[in-house]
Length: 390
Image (cartoon, rainbow, N blue to C red; front, side, top):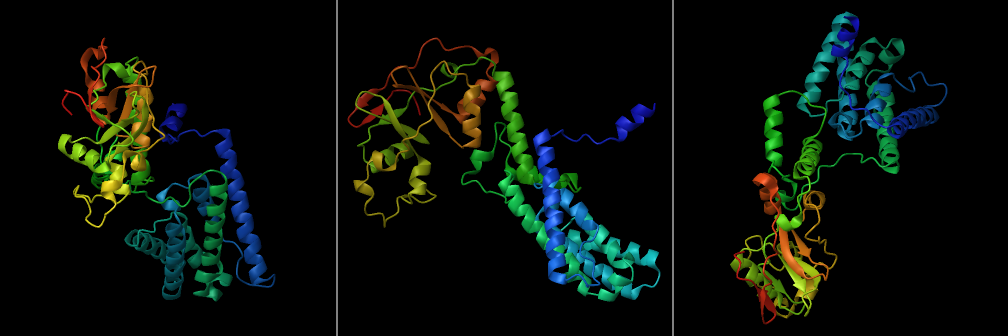
């Protein structure tokens, strides 16, 4: 009975490796030690102000053990701690009863942090410290907000930035907006707006950012796909090659073909059909040759002279027909590759796998293999076209 009760009350935290636990432990040691030593050196031995306050220990737990948490970001610790300290000092001067003052300071600090999106749990202890910290804190008044709260918080944040970066953890966590939202939709087409809508519907503080949650969902989908796909090979899901181009093909010809056939990318091959590169719509956008509506920019007077080799990506990720489809999932989701060429043993392009092909392959009943490869396209000048629809 007792064991069942303990199991029910214990949180289901994900176990981390010994290396990660050691990293967080060492980080907290370094952060608190530096904050204390620097504060003591700046304030002097005879200062009546405390050099470190207890809530900084709780802040260190978040900064070094959970640096990706939205509650551990620089704005949360700096603004949250300073707001809570200012509220605590104010309430301590207005309310004589320490218990009532503590309750008011804590509740108002939570409301202010939620309003300013600076929620930081240790800041609640900062508010209580401002009220119950004794004569030394009361004597400081609003100076307590600066010494030691703001100084301790800033030193901890700087230490966390340096230490986490040096040990392979991104801090602060900066949301990254993908250039193309379809890169981050995942295999089940989960959009960032879907994640945000679910979090709003949940209507509770979740200790994870929408970006991290979305990434976790994508990684879970990848693992589910790999488990479901089993031994499915690229030959079973690849589409025929709609067209190929030579390195010397004018880019205006390539863009016109992409527009007409609604293609996202084209393989670039040599005279023998060997894959040498790939050119995509993104290459045109990155080079500022076309606008978001697909119109060629008039000021690009050099556009007619550019060739495929001027624009194409040479480091092409390709696969063999017998390559397992599960091997393509990670590069297509994580790196945003919309198309991956499928080549034979001679490096000749025999098909293309798109993100849509991945989805259809996953849900295709039976996962039946395709026995024959698509027919090779017939060459027409510099552009090679097949009879298959795009």
